[in-house]
Image (cartoon, rainbow, N blue to C red):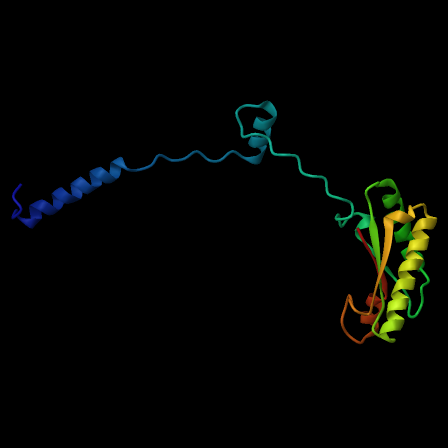
Amino acid sequence: MNLHAHPLIVLPAVVLLLAAVAGCATQRPQPAPPSAAELDRLQRSGDGAPAAREPAQPRSPLDDPASPLYRKVVYFDYDTTEIRPEGAALLRTHANYIYQTPGARVTLQGHTDERGTRDYNLALGEQRADAVQRFLIAEGVPAERLSRLSYGEERPAERGRSERAWALNRRVELVY
């Protein structure tokens, strides 16, 4: 081929050559992915669909927001260890679960608000945890599955010097 050919002749030849090469490289359209209903039907019939997924692990009732066991905090009034009626109902639910679940072990973490001395609050937190422990044992929970720990005012649920913060901090947490 003559390299010094006229540009009006060479340019159309190059364009035709590129078009031919590009036409050969085009991809065929891919089929649409199967719908969820089609995948379900194929998995049930065994028609070559991907292997069935592993069954989902059942969610523990302790981690299920719809379960009454999801709530694990009992609240107390100011300067008292008396379990409120709503706390008693919650503890009965947990007592039943602990009793029926052989491997269940629970630490009862006692807390207070910031008012009072450090020593007083540690003692009050322990007394609250002890009150919850006595309640659970009375409901049939074996004592060896329960332990107590007092944090006093050291781990507030909510920081601040308000009635709301103080009320949220006066508690016993059930930690499985």
